[in-house]
Amino acid sequence: MSRWLRALVVVLLAASCGGGGSGKAPRNLDNACSILEQRSGYYRAFRATERKYGVPVHVQMATIYQESKFKSDARTPLRYTLGVIPVGRQSSAYGYSQALDGTWDEYRRATGRNGARRNNIRDASDFMGWYMAKSRDVLGISLNDARNQYLAYHEGRTGYRRGTYNAKPWLLRVSGEVADRSRVYQQQLRNCRAAR
Image 1: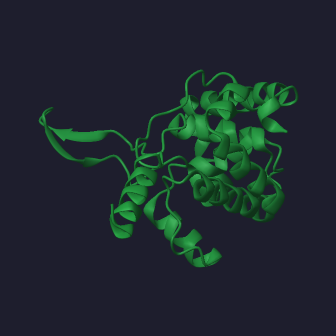
Image 2: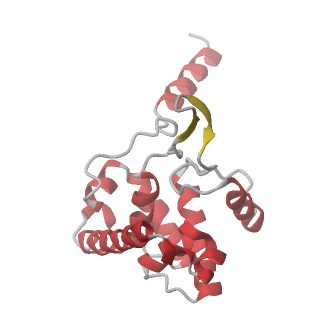
Image 3: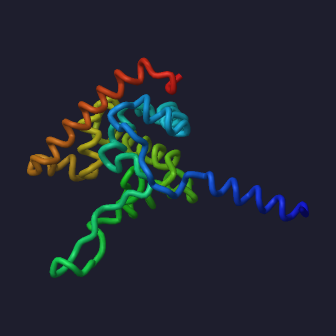
């Protein structure tokens, strides 16, 4: 076999093992250790974000759970007219972090990460850290406060400042669930081999 053909086979095999495009979530999403054992790259990404921005791993994980259930290619549902004709998605939210097109573009410009992709856990985690750190700076929300960080993440900083979430009982319930999950993940991570 020629050297060129061998190199092509190696590249194709490596590409097929990349795991970047399947979008499939880990199993047992209620267990932080199980998630990290199944996806070793997740913990490295979360720790890098924690070191860079100060957002704890458990807060990142609880937010990603709520936003995408750890599916790299998560999208909002389609909208239909007349109940059957698809007319587009509810929003441009995409990927692990469910970042909107405009917010993602703002992040890439602000950080110089022009090649960042929303379906890449390292990029999505870095985006989340960047966004939450700005929420701390602008709104005074502690990086450990999963509930209010989630409300600002979901509503945007302007919406959070205006208190738009107060008119959304379902969102107040969900933000409480994010806070609860964050506490559970924090406890689990203390005894987790994958988090060492």
